[in-house]
Length: 252
Length: 252
DNA sequence: CGCAGGGTTGAGCGCTCTCAATATAAGTGG
DNA sequence: CCACTTATATTGAGAGCGCTCAACCCTGCG
Image 1 (cartoon, rainbow over the protein chains, first blue to last red):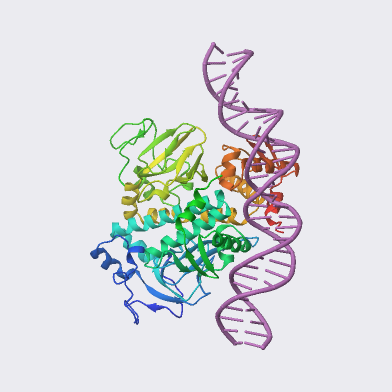
Image 2: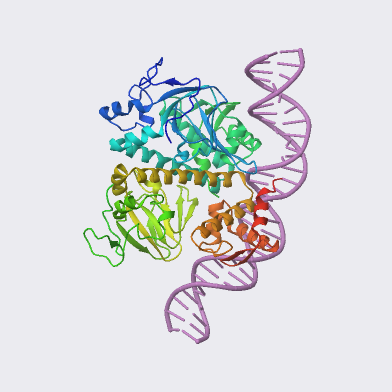
């Protein structure tokens, strides 16, 4: 429940104690409006600057935390791209989310152990937010308390949206929803809403959407044939966003 | 974000202000170890006794809150049984959970509006926990703060489990998982683990599990034929819990 | 250049859905 | 209390969506 006892080798410690190369503060971070500090005023921002205990580089394929690890911190994506996944007793694997800049991972571990594994899909960097600090600071800063609760609530709401997708949508509706969701998140981060690079494999998309990788591949091809998108391996260009919305609207 | 502005007619107000018929405190509640106060010591318990702003009766079929309602409180099931569900723009409906004594509903609304509708499946009663009070008290009572965070985290973890179920399991695995989950929750509340009354319809079970009601019905019959359970409408008796576990283990 | 991981595409199957009829339970009003 | 209505559950027959199995292709990299 306290700050991580074991520090990863690539960890850059924060100033209060150890030296570090780069500025590690929320107030100087261009992702702050997408992240935990969203909505805080300048004074509050300065108060929580020390909440970023450290930054940590995560090479492609490495895990930030794994199922069963004792919970210590929430992790914010500073750069790069992640998936979270879980595996049940019988070996069934499920990707529970994809995470990009400013998004938070590991919240389901609060009060116990992480219930999933967070794996980087490209060379990435995370901010380590020790729970003990968040806990402490959110007692004194009502804005942070609210923001933390709001972030947790949004994660629950997001999961419910995925449950709707998995429980009620057909395969093509799932993929269309997925693409539009990615598009929306990319545009908020200043990237093109219509052209992006998928960091995950067809298998990972399939796991997230409750489909087999072949089905995902076929759907990509089918969307391309219909003029909705252009796909070439991991590169995607959305050509007809309205058409994608129509895929959802066309209920039988 | 403050205490509910509109009070439901059947609401029994708490002592600080208005009279009421029954004791409305956590310390006198036999569900406290399953609910928000779990793990608090006696002193802390007394401090949060006033957190139950009111109790409210919810006749079968009524909603405690609905999608889009401004968030004001978290609701704890005092007695009875609930479902939460959401409907998307195209009319797809998804049951996101079933809730029994001591379980909390509405947390996904924190900081905004409820994202689902909570409907009672039998005449029930809920405790109204105004968020403003929770917020205030959890600043002064670290145990409550932790418990709140833990409850939110468990809800996220639960949702991930459902995502695994919906994304990776076959129909019969889903129903077996569902029955074992119900059994576990009933036994914690002092009911029989092997014999219980389903409060929800086949359609609601189906929606929750991502199946059609006919499929659910067929699976019940099939489980019965295999000697795993006895079903008669809403009455279920588990005859072979090990067999149900085998349904899950038998991966092809 | 060869290899490995990832992606595409085809053929056929089977699980779950759709449509439909019937049964049973639970209300509802006379 | 009973006839009628409505909601819920069961079961069957057939169709189709997505899966399985398999072959082949593409791309990056040692």
